[in-house]
Length: 301
Image (tube, rainbow, N blue to C red):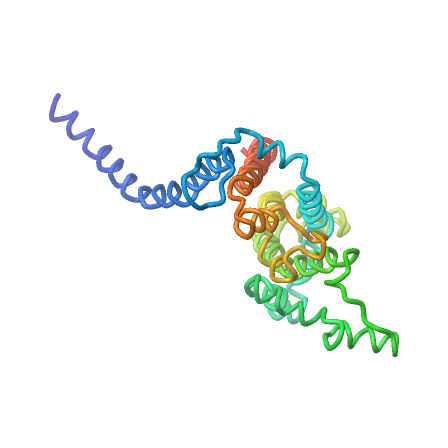
């Protein structure tokens, strides 16, 4: 019996060791890069600390009280919410529509347009911000050229210098940059839908709207869920593009919660308050992830 147990237990132990060896590096990286910074930020949020010397000025939850009464935080969160809403309502439907077009075998130049719309996503966020700063430049940029063509003699608007237009100008850049990512996700999802179903529905006389609602949309559930998750989480983590195009200014008119975190924590050396903002962002993303897993992913299982 002992020999049989040893034989039975051997492969199980070997499998456990193999699993441990394969997962250990990822687990170590996750602990070092995610869990440890989160715990440290939570500890910083309880103190008034400038990052120099020991943490001795304990404030408890007063940093969080200041956070919820901070008008700039409210403005920044509203900008993040607007980015998420605009992405869900405008960007994703447009990406779906274009994915349907470039996935059609009869459409000539489909490969070219797929590459053309995906290229902005390949560019780094800093390069994207610098590029669009030149485009928006009111004296020699592309906006100046278009404005002079449409309204000869009129002064081109400083879109990044006006508190009424700076956020919308940056939002257009965000849509331009990440549009190709969602289109590519949808194109990949459309390729998994059996063509026989669409051909059979077409032969039966089903309209394009009916085919989209009954075949394509249900078959695209997983890509749509993935795209929605990336859009919402990314909307609350947006930083590089906004920072490269004016650091959320003028007068916090394009501020996001992460740019404000950077300003307060690293530029003004208010590490405690910055830690409170970091914990707040973490909890927002965590709650959305739990909601996403419970409501959307549970239906799939």
